[in-house]
Length: 364
Image (cartoon, rainbow, N blue to C red; front, side):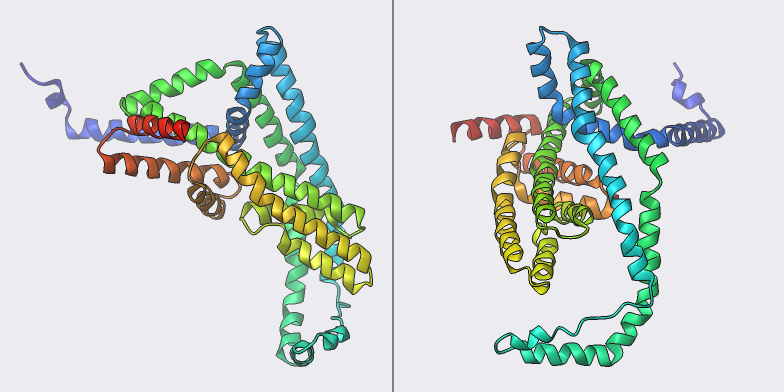
């Protein structure tokens, strides 16, 4: 009997391949506008799914009320605060644009540098040498571009239309995922099993655990540090505290911590003879900085007991390569690769390896 595969000639194979590639590319282009919203919704739902189940149990198993409750929480604690924060950022950044774009930008004398013991006079002389030589010329050349760059960034942030669309899509997808969570989970597990019947479920489990660890251990920690820092900056009358708070979020996400933003604020307070406020902000900044070493390990263990180094490396690398969504892509990819490699070294399936790790962690 002739094999059916032998009947397919080369031209038919090429045309079939072209058709599959074309329909795949077309499908991707169609769903491309929805990908970002779906990824954010998936991240939110995966992280908060246990909360949904607890609310549903408390409400007597009524899923619709539980979903409405979760969407209300998202609106009150995520969507609305983000919109207000972006709006405040745009408002407070306008004076900075004018300041950077103006030709009246003058650099301070910093006479107080001479009072610093041992190194003060050398720093003062070097600073003024820089201003009187090529350093000042270089800064004058860069200054116009500072204003243009800042204005470009703020104008991009002003594009509220696209921003609101993404937030709306995130909210819609979150509602659908909350409502059909079990069905979607079943389909994903079936798909993973088709790819790898031995390791498919384990990889899905790893992905969920990695996302929860990143959201709790990195993102939530950064938001808490930024919120506490913003409260301190607001109370102590530091200007542009909203902009500084957003910079602190980014600084914490790339694992630099809040101090690179808070230290200049402390110096600014001392410079303006607000010694009491400067000292209070210094104490508050040290508290926020120390809090990072307490919250991050605690939250990561809540999400899952995964290697902290891999999570942080994945966060930084993913952020640099994929942007903000790389916060979750980077750690997931690294952790899956790490687990697969360790399981391969031990000569067992990743599922058996994870079971062994879970047993040992419970014993310890």
